[in-house]
Length: 254
Image 1 (tube, rainbow, N blue to C red):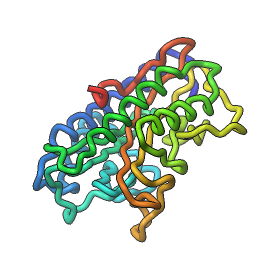
Image 2 (cartoon, one colour; image 1 turned 135 degrees about the horizontal axis):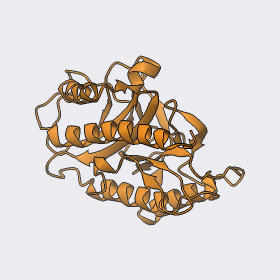
Image 3 (cartoon, rainbow, N blue to C red; image 1 turned 45 degrees about the vertical axis):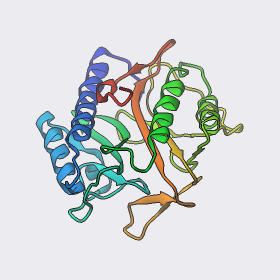
Image 4 (tube, rainbow, N blue to C red; image 1 turned 90 degrees about the vertical axis):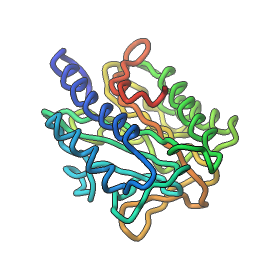
């Protein structure tokens, strides 16, 4: 969407606060021995307290309030009583929701407790890459230039990017134009970021894989070559200068 009134900006700030706070509190609440179902129910209760509706449930009839992906899962992990969190797990939580006709999206990966699998550099790299990408976005900048930043920074750090998962426009629905804000440079993509537009920028940084493939459950994505993937995501408003980071309350950069 394009922000044209103060009321629209306020609406986006309200739903963004809801998803950002939910993500932050879920991250803090996660403990070894807890099921991903229990963690998801905790997040669902927070969304309900805001009067917000889970976007994956509303849009896709997803079997959870949020997506929780563990270790080799890349995205769209289904919360379940069978998946029990353990010390050292790489966890990704993606929270998106709707409130009063406005939609926002954010996510983050973190290590639960001690870094047993030595994945902190991957998590930190993903955060830093998202920070640099977002801080180079303003009206008139090519989408492909941001893709170049993400991919080149990943390579410098010794990682790859997942090429078939992307950022996207958001605001009046979960996915809007531009539909594909790539994690790499597509020199044929001439689209540019527009001032006042709302977009969800997300990094998918990988140790081995270049693409995500779907498991038989019809939801969960894993890397085509294995390994681990981290994702970090903010919903922002594009301006002529530094973007307005609507979901900054999730504290994924802290």
